Amino acid sequence: MKEMNVFFEMHRDIEILRRRAIAEYWNDNQSDDVIAQLSLRQLSHLVTIEKLGSCSLQTVMRHTGLSKSAVSAAVDKMVRLGLLSRIENPENRREILIGVLPAVRTHLENIDRRFRHLVTGIFQKECTEAEMTEIAGVSALIVEKLKKYDLK
Image 1 (cartoon, rainbow, N blue to C red):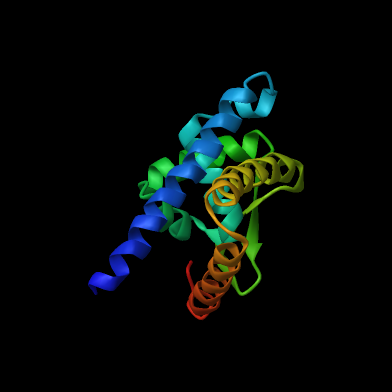
Image 2 (image 1 turned 60 degrees about the horizontal axis):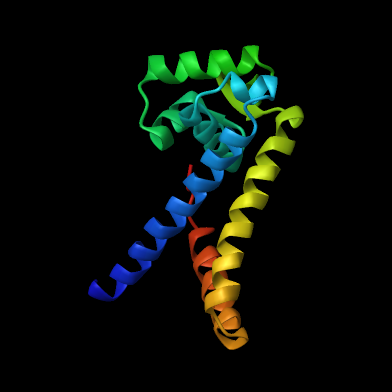
């Protein structure tokens, strides 16, 4: 699958930009009571949880690579800070779902806005209008294919 190498290289580069957006936001918002209480890694995990939507601790473990005790401790802290909620899974009462509370969504939207600004700035500087249209089309196809799978 040599032809896929460029896709994976692009993904790594985009991931670096996403991490940069999170780090810049974290650095710029150390005066905010909530953000200042999170480590950069915890903020990154919060972004991941928000993208996943309501999910189990097991799902958070799978996507962060953290142990069960580390995920539990991180989630406990974020619940205490009013960033996350725990709710009973309506489909399985023995399972607890983790979700991002509305109060923190502004921070996450600002991170996403910063990330989009970084990526868009590069593409606008480096690409023609025709290339931008082609990138948008290929990106839409990738998203369409990925939506067929349960990424949780």
